[in-house]
Image 1 (cartoon, rainbow, N blue to C red):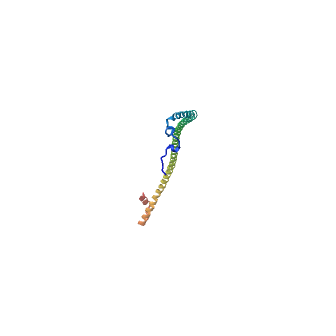
Image 2 (cartoon, rainbow, N blue to C red):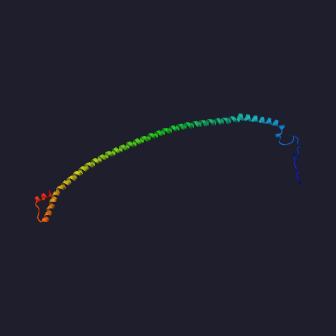
Image 3 (tube, rainbow, N blue to C red):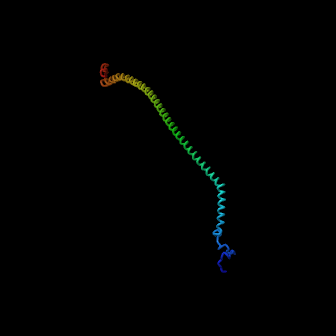
Length: 178
């Protein structure tokens, strides 16, 4: 079977009555009606949109803008309040720190004074004990020294007797130990 070129007239069976075929929208003789319908549809859409839909949209936009502006104003107000509270808290912290340092310094001074007082009392007690000990030592030394002469006399007598074989007299012992 041989293929033959097909034409629009043969396939549709319609004669070319409208001037050569193609899209009717692009033919100049139909443009007048198309423009009228375009203007009519545009006017209806404009009226519907401007009277019904656009006022709602613009109202929503204005409401949203007012809410955003109010939220921004609230945020600024809260930020300012927070800054004031932060400054007040910082001042309270500084005051508490100064008070704590003063309390610590007072406690340290009081503890130092109490320690110095206790140390002075202990030093006084120790000084009394030292005086008593020195007196006791002096008494013991004096007593020992008093016995030294007797011990020296006895030792000299024993040495003389051992070396000479006879006992030394009291006058000789006194002269030797003096």
